[in-house]
Image (cartoon, rainbow, N blue to C red; front, side, top):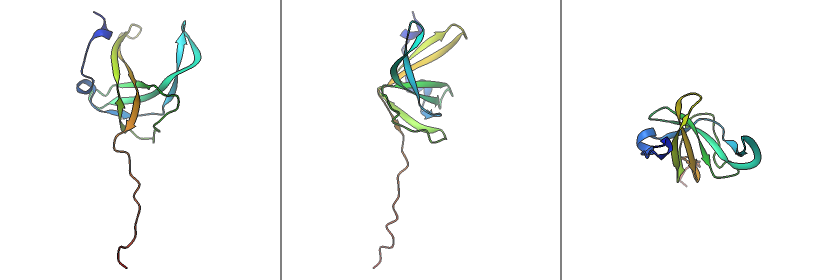
Length: 118
């Protein structure tokens, strides 16, 4: 059995995710070398259950969410995550890809309508 074939409940294992850094472009690699072909935008996150840091790749060419300098709760639509073994460090890592990212409960702009009395 391969580690990538292990099925697990992502939400039960990792809990909610928090965006913890600026999104970065992720490029396609061929024969161990980076190409100029953009694969996705990578969003660095931390899980609230395991406190594990990893990057979720979102299939887009321009970041759709900005990092505001502090950890921000996010959700990913159609998230596909797999575990893999890093044989150099002997650690189990997470590979995660999603179709879309959204900020959970984004701040709303409040407009002061003034005094209601005439």
